[in-house]
Each structure stands twice: as structure tokens, then as C-alpha cells.
Amino acid sequence: MLMLSLGLVLIGRADQNFSDHLRAGLDDLLAPAYQLVSGPVDAAEHGTGVIGHLFDMEAENEQLREQNRTLLQWQAVAMALEAQNDALKATLSYVPSPAPKFYTGDVVADLGGVYARSVLVVLPPRANDPKALVGAIAMDGRGVAGRVVEAGSRSARVLLITDLNSRIPVALGAAGAPALMTGTNGPDPALLYWAPGQPPAEGAMVLTSAVGGAFPPGLPVGVVHYNAQNDPVVLPLADLSALRLLRLFSYPENLPVLTPIPASPSAPHNRKH
Amino acid sequence: MRRRPSLWRRLDAASRYAFPIGTLIFGLFVIGLPFGLPGQAELRPIFAMACVFFWSLYRPSSLPAPVVALTGVLVDLLGLSPVGLWAVLLLILQGATLASRRRLIPRSFFLTWAVFSSLAGSLSALAWAAQSLLALAVLPGLPVITETLVACGLYPALAAFFIRAHRGPAAVELA
Picture 1 (cartoon, each protein chain N blue to C red):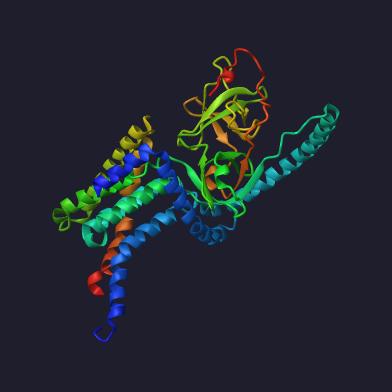
Picture 2: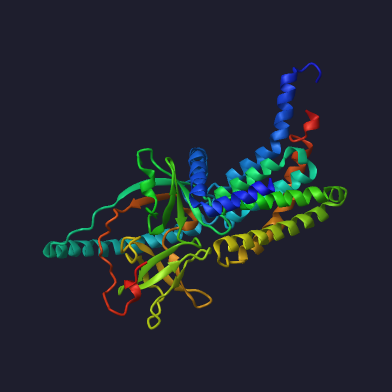
């Protein structure tokens, strides 16, 4: 038995497709079961978040009311800006980038490992070509949560941005300074390879960048923060510890090249991957 | 007892025999639910280790080696670790437990607890080493420590449940 298992490790090492197939099959098998159970679990949580949140609901409500007031002010600002933006686009004859096809799926299981972070999403039955979904970008209501690494006929596994193997080219701040966001297995991904002369500013917005062609530019990811070791990390906008719904955006192969990165000959983003 | 049809009796015995396997697989399924608990992912191998350790110690016939290997593959497939890794580790755990069970069973609960904690710690370290080797990168070592501590803290609670089951619904001789 031990020899067989050791052999299995070697087979899995030699042929990556073998374990991917097994995993996708198992995920498809488990997805309906998890979906069945997740209904009552959701009901128990009243859709407010994880069970632990029930205890500090009072304080949270107060905080939410406060936030709501602030957000209403911002809404007015946003609407004004939207109107201005529309007017400017009309004068520029701006061509919008093609709208991506997307599916919305329930997160039914948290299938991370000790050194891996992933969730299982149930796909709607009309997703007729599941393999095309591999590489799709998963976002919750606020920001990028991860990418689809495996897709079966009923389910898709999303590798979260906190996973050790996650590498996402990002653009920092208004200037769009290039950097690489790498998962660390902890809650906040690290920022690497930023230009040495310009360290990322605390609180700067982190957006995806189209370098390498894997991501469309300009999707919100998080905010720059300096941790206790004074290393820049990204605080993800997506609520990765309590994901409920994910939208899977499948972008066409020919991504429009609309990088927010200003073209300069010394910038490292010209490098091909 | 004697008047009951033998079919029911055999069903009863079979369900008692299957109790450890059933709880093991059901537990692995439940740990996958998105509760959002911190360290939920670490719980999966710990639960599998505790089950394999306890049942190999007190009721080895209910958890044969092929079942342990399949459980290990299930842990790997659910938890994105290299396929077969936990199968090997759980079989090693079962082998170690079976080798020492004659000396362990008459001893106190605290000794078995200590033995389980040290086994869980060394297996977590082994998993870390093997995964680092297969990924050709040094993985963060903190999960090994948390895994060992959680395993140590969780074993009495799991054992309390298992001991009740061992005397009740899993006791094949009571069928």
C-alpha cells in the first residue's frame, strides 16, 4: 500500500494532468453535495457573514450606519464624476473595451490546504464549455479574489490571490507604477519588484496590469499597506475569508492593450514573460 | 436478540464496522464548508491523523490500510497538496501506531495524547519537507507549528467523541 501511494506521488509529479483530472472529477462529484448543505449554513448565518460575526453585530451596525452616511456623500461625487466622464468620452469618441462574458457562482466549499488557498464555485448548468473557463478572473463585489485553475462540468476551483503560487502583475497608484503581487499563504499578499527609487506609497490603490497578457488592466485588487516588518503588502479589497458569491470573468484571448503604465524606455514592464 | 432476523443483525454489524470510515469521510466533507474559521485548512489533515491514530490504536480492523490510503488521496485532492502525499504520511502514521499499540493501550490517556501530538508534529514537518522538495522551494514553516499545536489541543475533544463511539455505535461485538 505504501509503495502504491509512493507511486501515486511519482505519477502525480510526472503527469500534472492526472491529478488535475482526478481533482476536477472529485470537485464535480462534491459540488452538488456542498451546494445542498450550503443552503442551511447560509440560513444559519442570515447572510450577514461568518458565525463569529453574530456576536459583534451591534457595533457593526453602528459602524455601517456611519459608513453609509459617508458613502452617500461619495455617491453624489461619483455621479457628478460619471456625468463629467460621459461628457468627456462623448467628445473624445472613446471606444469602450469589449465587455467580458461572465458567470456568477456560489462559493460552496473552502478547499484550501496547509500551503494552498482555493475555493470551490458551483457553475450554472449553461456554462457549456467549462475548459474555456480556466484562467477566468474571479471577483467578488469589491475586487479581484483569484483565478480559475480547474474547471469541470459543474464546478470550478479558484486559486485565491493569497496562495503561494499566485503571481499577479499590478499597477500602483495614479501613475500606475509596475510591481508584482505574490501570495504568501498569509492574509495579505506581498509586493515585489517595484522600482527601487519609488517605493509604493501607503494607501495607494492597487489595480491589475496587463503586463504578460494574463489580466485585463484596471481591475481593483487592494490597497498598499506597510506591515510590522516595514514591507509593502496589499490589503485585498475582496473579503477572502468569507467569500459567498464570485463572478468569473472570461476575457477574450486578444486583450486590448490599454495598460495604465506610462511608456518609458527604462520601465521593466517591457520584459516578455 | 435471538429472534431478530439475521439480515438486520448483519446490517447492524456492517454499520458498526463502517462507523470509523463514515465519520472520517463525513468529517473531511464538513471541514470543507466555508465557515471562514481561521486555520480551517489545517484542520483537514489533523482530523484525518486523529482518526487514523485513534482507530488504528483501538479498532484496527475497522480501518484497513487501503481505506487509509484512499482517505489520504482524498485529503490531497481536497487540499491541493501533491496527490498521494498524505496517503503515504497516513500509512506511515498507521504503521507506527500499529507497531506500538500493544505498549500504548494499557498506558494512561496522557501518554497516548503526548504520543499523538509528537506524531502529528513530526508528520506535519515531514509534509512540509516533502512539499518543499516537490515544489523546489522553501515553504513557510509557521503552519507546521500551528498544526502541531492545534493537533495537541484538539485531540482530547476528538478522543472523547471517539471513545464514546468506540463503546457505542462502532462496537462491532455489540451487534
